[in-house]
Amino acid sequence: MTHQDPPIFISFGNRKGGVGKTTSVINLASYLAILGKKILIIDTDPQANCSSILLQNYGDREKYSLVDALESPENNNMLLSTIACSTFHPRIQIIPNSTRCMLWERKISQETDAVLGIRKLVEQDPGLNEFDFVLFDTPPNLGVMMNNALMSTDYVIIPIPPSDQFSLDGLAAYLDLIAGIRKHNSQLKLLAVLITKYDPDWGNSAQNLNQIKKYFSQRGICIFNTHIRNCPEIDMAHVERKTIFESAPDSYGANDYASLGREVLEIFNVLYGKRFI
Ligand SMILES: Nc1ncnc2c1ncn2[C@@H]1O[C@H](COP(=O)(O)OP(=O)(O)O)[C@@H](O)[C@H]1O
Ligand SMILES: [Mg+2]
Image (cartoon, rainbow, N blue to C red; front, top):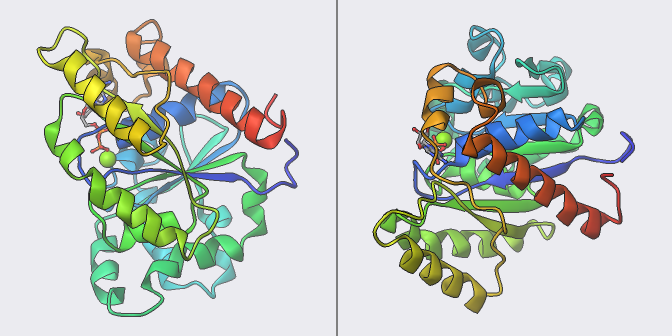
């Protein structure tokens, strides 16, 4: 892929928290960067977990956050590509978030173009073409920031832990939101569901996984072949503020996120004609 091409925008979303959105953004980004891809992460979750783990200088979070760009879209010094912050990896940059974003959401929510903020920032920023992928981490709700991310997204990945009934219960509403946004963003496609925190030894695991497979196959939605297994080292990596590849490179988690990275690139090779080799 040449760097004249626009990046591919991927959102990790599920209206439920704790399903592995942030973990997947961090570790997929990390593996793609290891393979030489250039990644921008946009943290649209005001809880800012992704920012707190990846930022090289934690203080950057208050200096250059997404909300500052959203509040001054006409300011050329606040382009996303200009304010992108360094992370531990030279090929990953991040637009951090902060709790101030919640105030912005409340202020903007009544305005008709409330969901277009990020899209406008993306459209006016040719500097984003230096990235291969832009990954959105999203909050656990269907509010303004989730809508903003989906309005700028080409592909959605939905992480689902089969052991979490509540994450399954909220799915229909999330699929409805994607269908609604597609009327305004015709690029938007559901790439696949990602099974996370999978523990084959857990009581109802096999049964729940079958239920999930049936639910999605009836709707013509793919599930990644790669399942991210339950892996205690992932929690430990977060405590250390590291990716799984730095913290426990021999763990299931590192193995599974590497496998996911290869699977994602293979899918895009097909979709874009070998562009990622
Ligand atoms: N594969 C996994 N194995 C074990 N724990 C995991 C795994 N994936 C995520 N976790 C843990 O689950 C919790 C929620 O994950 P997170 O990525 O923050 O979810 P979300 O962003 O959807 O809220 C975190 O404590 C994280 O460390
Ligand atoms: Mg999260």
